[in-house]
Image (cartoon, rainbow, N blue to C red):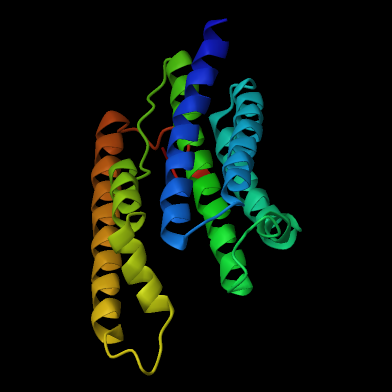
Length: 223
């Protein structure tokens, strides 16, 4: 029972992050009647993910958990990209214009929240597993930088600059400014993430002077 309550809390936490990200993207792209389906699909992937990660955690193998999380994220994005999911959701839209751009928007509204959901679930499930094994749960993954990047990029101003940079037009005289702001923003986030990873790695080395910890981060990154 305590484990079920813990995993329910993990699911709700990841759902909150994923659905908020989807709402931010949907608001920016002007989603219409199809958006409830987007939210439902993100929720469905969240449930599948927590069940998959919970099954991996039940084997008490943190390294396997890392690979399962990465594989699930890749498979989920592949399903979103190459299946008929996006056209099916798009068929419920009331927007008669810009079908191609709308499908790209729906793809982003699905893929980004799903990846964030899997990332959050990996973090909380891994922490729960390692604490249950009385092991160190510190990871080199830059959680602070990840949260900061999410806040910076998934707000109307950040999305507007990203869109203005990607959709370059020869008649757009403001493009150099938008591109400069976007590049500076991304560079700053990369530096912050690298610095955080460096600090976390130094802390881990002090805690485990004999060698790296046995439990790795996602995709083989030490945790």
